[in-house]
Amino acid sequence: MGDIPERFKHLDFMRMDRRTFLKAVGALGASVFLQNYRSEIVKALEFAENRIVWIQGGECTGCSESLLNGGEPDIVQAMQRLNLKITYHELLMEQQGVFVDGILVNTSELNSELYFEEVIEEGGYILVAEGAIANGPDGSGRYCVLGGKTYKEIFRKAAENAAFIVAVGQCAAFSGVNAADSDIRDLLDFRGVAFTLEDETKGILRELGIDKPVINIAGCPPHADWMLLTLAAVVLGKIKIPEDLPGVLDKWKRPKIFFPPDHTIHENCPRRGYYDRGEFDTTVSGEKCLWKLGCKAPYTHADCAIRRWNGYHSLCPQSGSPCISCVSAGFPDSSRPFFQEIEDVGIVGTNLDSIAKVAVGGALLAAGAHAIKRFSEKDAGKEGGEGKEDENGEEGNEKIGKETEESGENEGRNEKTETAPEGKKEG
Ligand code: SF4
Ligand code: SF4
Image (tube, rainbow, N blue to C red; front, side, top):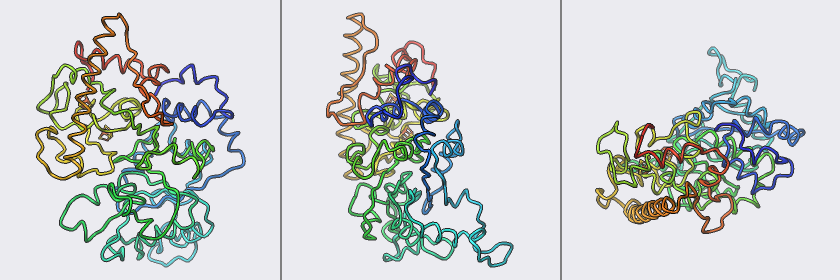
């Protein structure tokens, strides 16, 4: 996300309060943050080592891959800078399994099951859970078995001794595709950690009777920054657990700084100018607004359009794919059908119907207000100044578009948005 903005350059990291810290990580990418505050971070973490136990259940490994592809600094550098030690991660660790070359091994140097037991016994680690937890059939968890053990049992052990839990990705946070409508959904009974879809009574923690603080990093997959910077905020003591969580998380337990309640992706979309002028693509590979192809960004709360993906360069609507709202708790059913304009969709369920009506109304109002504001500002000879007021005064979601404009991070992006109708070059 470019160089560090001037106004963040001279801040004393050690004295930075939580609000300023969250503003900084909201406006900066992980790479800029970790590089520029390197010495302060090292100082702050001199004695602390934060162990991470990363387990994987019903998932595609996309969340780990998103983290691994996070760019510069790479995951190893980022972890070193944050003094994070991934003590256990099935995908990455060296342990071989129970058998090596066909021979049963009984040392934790080689046997991942023994190693897992040792790590769990120590306790006090940050548990990162990736993937949904199978509860079926009949509460046994046998629909997801790893090395002879149910993932439900593995999760239970790991959760009981954890300091707190970070559920990364839709599957761990909300069960995601595992809970998509199908004839076998109830039989499989996949659960998220604290929620199953939008239902907080169906999280696996409640089923297991475990009470632990949870942070949900939504997304299918989540952005590497969302994962890394959340961990950074916690290990650097900028978010204290559990006391700060109610202020920094939304009702879905997602960090508001990355999933701002008062900001949608649509507001900063590079195709936004086309939307305002009512110019829509009706087939893929065009360059206009993707609303008629089912874009859900007008009611999706995430900073994708500001932070951007793939080395901070792109996002789904920019590259030609309508946003499918992959960060929403009800995803994927609440977003289906993916490629159909909301108004064209019949009533397929309470979620989509109610969300769509509110969202469409809200989006149209927002578009109207946006267009009027631009018009009046043009009349008044003003440029920009489109920052959205923080109506609810919630911490961590303050005027995110404005923040980035002021900080220079979004330079050229809003400009592209505003000038897109005249000379569309994105996408
Ligand atoms: S493509 Fe989607 S996010 Fe972009 S302007 Fe159109 S509706 Fe909004
Ligand atoms: S733009 Fe939409 S579909 Fe793409 S990553 Fe963001 S929330 Fe998910």
